[in-house]
Image (cartoon, rainbow over all chains, first blue to last red):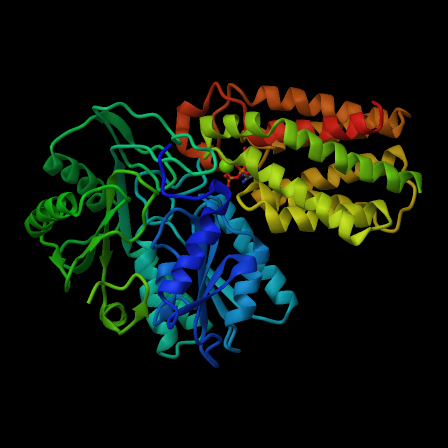
Length: 333
Length: 209
Ligand SMILES: Nc1ncnc2c1ncn2[C@@H]1O[C@H](COP(=O)(O)OP(=O)(O)O)[C@@H](O)[C@H]1O
Ligand SMILES: [Mg+2]
């Protein structure tokens, strides 16, 4: 393992310290609990948004804390859900009296821990509710799985629900639009390489030099198929085929498009992939709305690979995607 | 007093087991999950020991509750809330009791298993810790009703949990990260079922059984 770290067990704490120093006007960190909060939290009479999950997905989650997006993010150990204790601390730090809304990705650990946090917050008299995102079409949502996973599309939910809360929607209103965004988005990822969590020091899975995994999850969960690597256009065709073939009908609609790098994919390759995404969408009668989101939004340490997300928009969601926000992971300049 | 001391040594023994088997549990989890189960459990039980040392709970129920809070707060992942719930339910089942009968212990294991099933929405055969805990609860109940002592009840529970964990090997998973593997999960033991066995085995050994 070759990493720019001091000690594996201090990686998350030291990252948070760096984030706080780099973005001091925007966020502060509750170090004892690994919680990033908006510098001006709690914002009175606004629904507060809290998200969180394992570390190693940066800029998810702390990078989305700030005006117009999240009020707090809980940083778990690498690839491990944060705990109810962290979530409760975040909840108390950001509650401005209008309730706290959790954006939770669909992994058993994340869901169970946020559910417990909600029960603990209830006991302290703070009203909470949550949405569970599950945009990944790589797995079937059946009784034989833990359900579809939440991946990069979750960032759209952060943005839309965050802007809705900033706009003054109440807890039920924020929940409604978060669910609406989740119901209208589909994602799919792929990977060329594995990644190495610092504490174990071992790659989380093996993959051959010539191989790729289509449908790879953000913690290295397997996807649809392991096979020999193909040209970029063919990979994009397969991923989009699965997304467009799913239950949301994107054709004829305006759609927000994200091409998200998993950590070790050159931006060059992301744009190259986007070029074919744009061609296919045009052919399929899907209209790309605004400026597409090409870059690193939700990574998996140093994994090489990318994901594609499509979100079918309505006027309200468009307004919230466009609304101003100020977060560490904002687009440069 | 005896039951309090015994409960403390049970937790101590569990913590030692989680330390000893940390690597193996993590290994099992990297085969069909995300490779953190051993680390998670070790972190949680170290936190439980610290919390017990700091708070000095005086009844078996309070010890289990303290342990539950440490697990909920420090483990993370799926196992944190699941084991946290297990210990919390066991604590509730024993509330107010200063001495423990074999029936009490069996009831606590049964409550723990039921708590995990409820929170995880899982059943035997889903290839989770429930595959170890539910047979353990049944065996404990049988042992208690046939007049066995506390140690023997725990031993019966541990042995059945061990068989249950072994029986997860050929299965595909319906819950947790392993469920995404489909057929590829077969041929591997579920890490949570294994840790459930190890915890019950540690409890039995703490009482000399
Ligand atoms: N829904 C569930 N019900 C019961 N047990 C579960 C469930 N989901 C996961 N588990 C158990 O949790 C174990 C994994 O724990 P751990 O690795 O610590 O958490 P995570 O899966 O979040 O990484 C699995 O081996 C399984 O026994
Ligand atoms: Mg795990």
